[in-house]
Image (cartoon, rainbow, N blue to C red):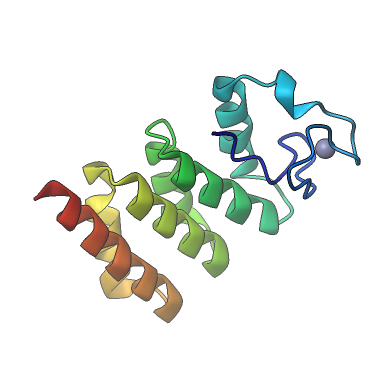
Length: 129
Ligand SMILES: [Zn+2]
């Protein structure tokens, strides 16, 4: 079930390789918990593509631990791509704590964020019925 397309230490793309060619991290040594922790830390990585990747992977993992951090990220980032990725991830995880923020972004967000928020809301409300 490993969803490891990126090295969780340096965020280089590693595909299916078990060892990162850039920094030498053996991704097999990481427990799912520590991988999740690395992803959570990566939400505030200075290279803007890294939080986007991290948010997407957290969404794929369905990480409940990531719900509050993703809400914070989506609420305060000024990067629309990061905001969009956080919103998509919140929709995938499907936790009702995200509803107030998703409703707000669906009304007030930039166009691409509004579209993502609309989809996330539909996914969330479908999941509950
Ligand atoms: Zn690496």
